[in-house]
Length: 174
Image 1: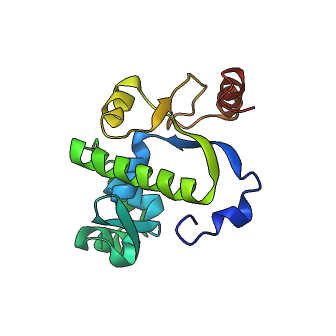
Image 2: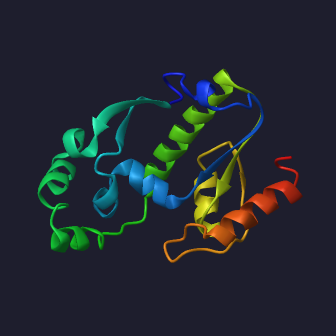
């Protein structure tokens, strides 16, 4: 959306603040980890072609690593195998976190090129410890608030309202 400049056609507000909601799980989705392939094998496979410059190379099912392609084609369709894949959790290492930070920084750059952004922030969903690690690799200001969560860490409907209320009361958006 950003790279092909379609976002300005969708977003009505062209000035103000931009807030990207982000968490460690998004890093694992970017990497195409086995536990995420269960629902994201057809997600865009982004490859860093030079520092901070990314290109979409199809999806993980067709253009991922050998293991990503095989798991997407021959394991995900079967419930047992798919359930087994969901157990392969691995926390991102610092190199992977740095890669994700470069992607977010490149998104900020593209966003600023297309909109009159006064401030660009990351709203962090996740733990303080994980946020501290990510913060080492990104220059973008990060904000965090407590909110009601579902079992998987995503905000519940109540939590989403709490996040919006926080953003308004802190005058991050108005």
